[in-house]
Amino acid sequence: MSSHRMASPALLRRLFALPPALRRTLYSTTATTNQPDIYDVVCIGGGPAGLALLSALKANPSTQTLKIALLDAQDLGKTRDTTFVDDEYSNRCSSLTPSSVKFLRRIGVWESIASNRTQSYHAMDVWDGVSGSKIHFDSIDGQGGGLLDAVAEMVPGSRFRQSRRRYESGGLDGAVATMCENTNLTRALMARTHTTDHQSALSPAPFNILDKTRVESIHLGPEPETEAALDLSQWPIINAQTPTGNNMLAARLLVGADGANSPVRRFAEIPSHGWDYNQHGVVATLHLDQHSSQSVLRTAYQRFLPTGPIALLPLPDNKASLVWSTTPQHALQLKQLPPQDFIAMVNAAFRLVPVDIDYMLNPSSTTSPSSKLSWREPATPPSSTGLPRSFPRITGLQADTVASFPLRMRHASTYTGHRVALLGDAAHTIHPLAGQGLNLGLGDAESLADRIAYGVEHGMDIGSCWCLDGYNGDRWAKNNAMLGVVDKLQKVYSATSGPVVWGRSFGVEVLERLGAVKGALMGAAAGGR
Image (tube, rainbow, N blue to C red; front, side, top):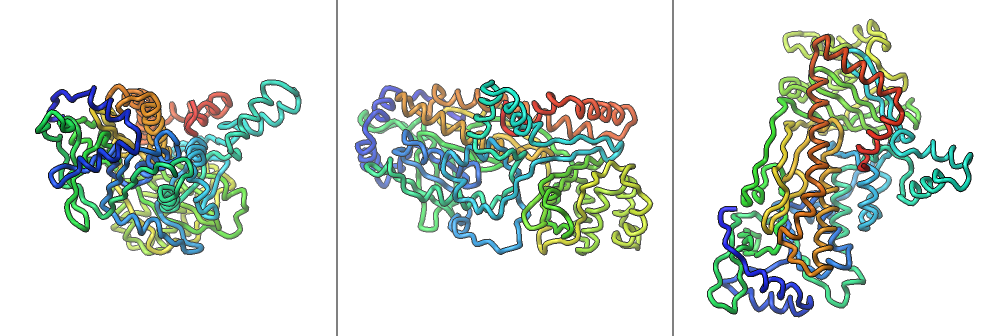
């Protein structure tokens, strides 16, 4: 930080040890026209990660008495009041791992999800766009569900039966992941923050949502004017512009859930390292042919092309979510195509060899992509591209859903500072090829909420490094490992030279035959160890 004057830890410990009602009385008398409003937790950022943290704090009896404020520049009321249109789906969807779903269930959020708009899938087909080598993942690889069923019947009373019970008690249905619109999730999180818990009915702490609020500055508080005054010289002070005027908030713990360009991270002077991929992610909501079986819709597909991976992820009602990582030039061309040509390009990206895909996007050609596909696809046998036999055909494009965003990798050197914690995109950004971005943020929220609860239960100052170091130790190394694996996959599959293609194809073929290793990879991707 820009200044590191010593705080008064004894005074802070005495203040935090006071009963909640007395502490709030002290807060109210401290907040004069010249003093900020004092909060235990101030979270900047009302996205899924920030809302998940506050929902977890609200769900835990140990933290329900904390005074909390959430600041966001958007109108969160619109998020809470979102109404869904039948048969239409957002282009921003996420694959929630079983670990993330379990966390959302534990804090009472999953029950508010519109379940008819989610789609679990139980298998993944992944293949190389150059060599055609492929690998198949399913719930038996990742969770052991089907295998445990069989073994438990053969070995009654064994540890396999105990494992099966643990598997069922986790509330899982054997899914590899569950597709959920981000708006569906944030609406459920907002609903959770507005519920009243019986545990806090005797002493409900203030929970203020300051949306449509712009953070003007963050700085450390002044030295106390008198010995009796609360020492805020090491507390972050947030100057915020609300629709009704200026607000000044002092945070015992300031949480940055404010995105990749995090002002909280800049205030704490925490470096963030990484690079841009020179790729854009193109997203859209697609219609699949109505002859697809339900089992097809429960499979996710991903093909690695030299320009980047393309994924088709199942949604309800024969719909699918597209995530296509490609060059900025290709992304721009795709967004400018009429619907029938965009559909043709997506079908081509899964069915044709890379040189034909590049030719179809050639801007100098006067022939439309849909016409090119009609005569190139019959000349390309599926065996030459690795196309799974169950792969559906894209038949339609939902209007106004094609969009793109730049792809980059960033990782903060630490997630914590004095009275500061980072989570979600403020701490890390990751390539979308593994669908882990939102899951990492939810894991951060779960871990930080648990550390705050631990600090409250043990009389710790929740803004001190003494309390926060456990969160950094729990999450930084795990996230760094995931970022590293995804980054290396992106680089390996971007290569087109013969030895690299041969090496990765050989590795995939070996991995396909090693069920135990596949299971370990699936378990890690699902949020396990």
